Length: 550
Image (cartoon, rainbow, N blue to C red; front, side):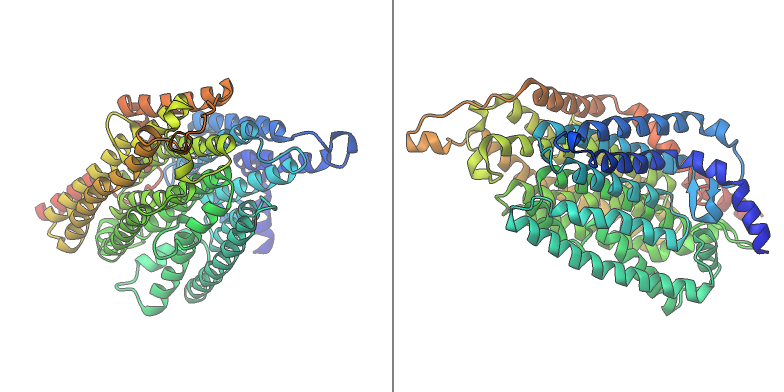
């Protein structure tokens, strides 16, 4: 049996290496940068450009996989998915989409680092190694197909993130933030590992499709299964900064550099949501001898109310906690928590349409949140502070910066015609349609949960108006400290390249808010095609009508 398994692994080795080529490129880049540091002649060179070039190359390779996936593996079992390395990883449209998202974002973050000069040349190799290492871990999270690989991928993403949070060695606040991150992360990892041991011990396998199929085949969930799933989801919720596992987020964002906060706020969210989508969608998947529609409707009774509660708490807490913040990074940290709740709302529908809406939201969130953190980083370089009081009247000193910052903040709010409105519109639409569908099926628990979640989402969108607009009011309407004290104001003159960087991000936010049909179609296709066993609402309705006729 072992020889047969070895032969299968060897036969699929070439295909597996081809599939994970983007990850291998990033790993090779890490080795290259550390090797370059061995030569004293290049010890003072900034290696951010090396990291940027190879991250961009990995993005292009992934883009080619995206376009060639149909020819790479014709449509077949599991809707074109390919199982790699003995079932440890899965390669499908969904994982490729998330990899494109992560690599594109990492490329933009490295470009931001080059402009803000954080890190400096001396620490650039270490910083870029940690950044690319965390990205590799997050890419593996999107492809993980086994409990062991889930744990390894999360730890690969977490450990470099701990070091990045404390990378500003001269700041006590940064070291304190890193220590808190490590303590919370270690606790979450231990709880998650215990949950995995419960599941693997009960069902005798760590292979995710088999494990979820065993769970789906049970008439009801016993205490061991519930605890195992709960502890597993706690580890994912930690990466997502979902309430009540969010405690690390504000302190880490405030202590870390704005560039690191931007990376953690977007990349970790994308990877965690991808992993959570695989698990929650698999819990309604196909099981031998049982109608998948029946399973999906049964599992939705458990999953939808739980996810709805977490989403509502996360969004509401994030928005209310942001009110009293005066540090911009801390304010954006609570904003990040609130947006994590909005994205959880899409997964709470437990539908492929919901996954598509979350993917759409993620892409929009990349540009608007990266832009907001980039503005904070540039303002920090100009004023030496990240406190809101130091940015009073900034419109007169740096009008381009304030205007682009306004674009990003209003988009995070969800004001039309900016892209944030389109993102929330997608989430609210799928919430309403799913709630209406469950009501039509007579499933009142699911319907009430989603209707309530839709109401909470709408109220929170209004609540967030106050703290987003507060920032703009201080920058535009308030008098600066120099003006109040009668001191001369020095104008801020940002370099053309940072202005162009912010301008491009703001332009994308505006264009995607007006012309978002193509992105919506692309994200919806991935949401539908990558989760074959889970039915769409139309498929459930068709099967229900067929059952009535019979």
